Image (tube, rainbow, N blue to C red; front, side):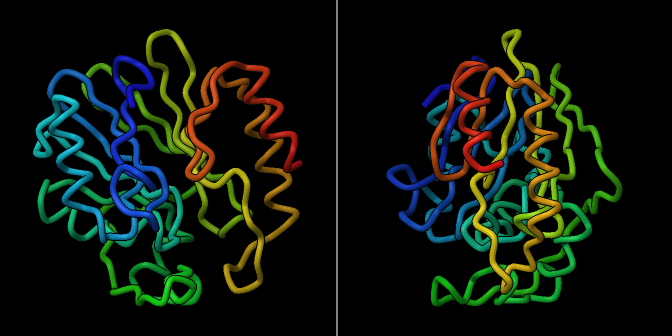
Length: 219
């Protein structure tokens, strides 16, 4: 599914594996980034979908993990092995990935285990920028669902696109969620006034009003 001329949905239920959260491909001028990695059981299909979108997987410079949960990160090691990319995550979630914490990553909810995963670029603070071809991607720390939850923004075809993979939550003690942080993060997302929201489980939401309404449901 093409979102803009630079962005394609390449993974998720119906595209790769039923347990996968959505995986988004951002590509420009022979370089690319993947937003999240699925659970690892549909990696071959994700890479095949990249090729079908006209992107050689070896173009992928960055795999940006929006948070540590298994349905978003279980395939990260395999994608790095196939593409040679750098794995990016906020440091407050990277620690759970590197420790192989199957509870905080929710792998145990899927009857799976989190194998220790080294993170190449650990983001600290509130934001960090990355270049992919002509595009500038910005990772914004939006804690709440997990301590190191983040969204990624990019302007494509004149539209502000936000990859807010688990805007909907949920909040759970086992995931180290924080309601106060979550509410503040939602308000930060509203302030962006995005044109497109690429969510991890609710698809692609288009139009400022529809994006605002979706986020406000959870405030």
